[in-house]
Length: 207
Image 1 (cartoon, rainbow, N blue to C red):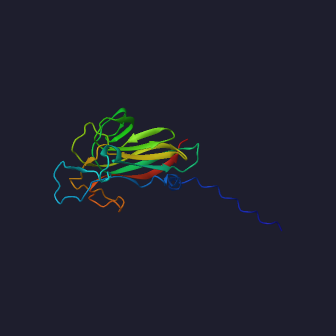
Image 2 (cartoon, rainbow, N blue to C red):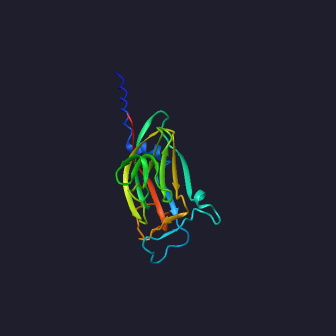
Image 3 (cartoon, helix red, strand yellow):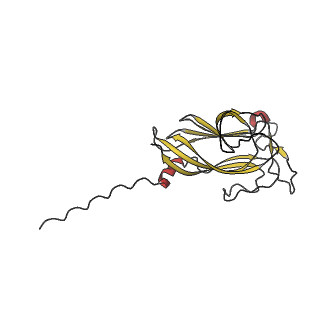
């Protein structure tokens, strides 16, 4: 009597998108925050600006109205990933130059083109690149919501740097009391200031 043949091994299943999203866990859910000092008025004045809570008492508004966070992207060094990010928040306008517009708000490369409005920036060490999130044709005492997605390229084990720079210790307040649904509960809304939450939507390996 012959012995039964061993079962054929099942072919390995291709990696699912949800599995690849794990390589971007370090940047998923990052929040840029520009809080205003004090509490939000019951009836804010239209176009109102406010002092930045990032600047400590007696601090230099031109040097301390900023923040930065370095995150190490996962994955394998040498492999490149196309990472789709969703940006949601409440921001003021900012002008940039010498780069490339990509939609209404996203700006690829270039540099700031104004010395007083808030800068929202993401920089990737490899392939070396940077992006701005609140591009407009003109600055002014306006506040608005953003909600859009963009895909950027990141090499495994690269550094992703998130930078916010208010430049002068003042910012346009959320005078319209705008609320963005379904963001982190840690963002108490209407937020007294400005913010952008960054969520990873999808990750695929670049072939």
